[in-house]
Amino acid sequence: MNKTSAHSSIIKFFLFFIIIAILLFLGKSVHVDLKAYQQFIQQFSPVLAGIIFIILYIFLTTFIWFGPKDILRIVAALLFGPGLSTLFVWLGELGNCIIFFHISRYLGRDFIAQKFKISQDDLEKTKKTKSALGLIALRLNPLVPFRFLDIGVGLSEVSFKKYFFIALVFSPFRIFWIQYIIAGVGEGYFQNPMIAFDYFQRNPAVTLGSFFYFGVIFILSFIAIMVRRKKS
Image (cartoon, rainbow, N blue to C red; front, side, top):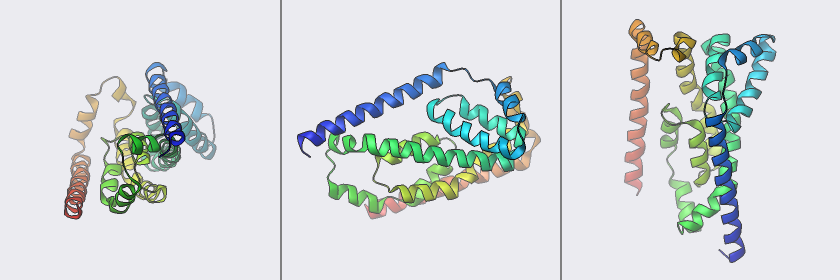
């Protein structure tokens, strides 16, 4: 890598870092009102409300990292139910996937490759051997935030086409699980988080389904690790 390319990658990575810092700051400092969003979306017809929700979701969760995503998911679950809210959140997350992946890919990857002295051959090997099962497990895991996964994969050599396909197919399972629980627990969670435990106690089928869901994630993760070890 020549000097000009090296300087360019440093500048792009610095810009990438500044963007991330600003988004984190906005998430910590901006107050989000559940009732305000609920009243605003309620005034429109169901179809228009869905379109407005998706636009709001992409815009707000792109620029504000803490607050809007949770609030909007709750609003969607309460207004549209678990099924429709899953569709709307899924479309919003696909929009986020495109944005964060490309911000990360074009502003940060060159610097990472230069900093850790990763050759083009190594990058190509990584691209070929990257486990799709591992990405699927991460995409399904509710403990891994979508936006951080989008950014992390953008820094890797995984193609956008491959990652977007995984996001497209597997995100709805995770989103539906979350939306179903939110719809059941309701907005009371903000006043008393313990209400979630009461909900699971009163709904053993949901508890059993949740254990099954995490079991699938564990099995996929285990297989992905074993496959990677065997190839390395």
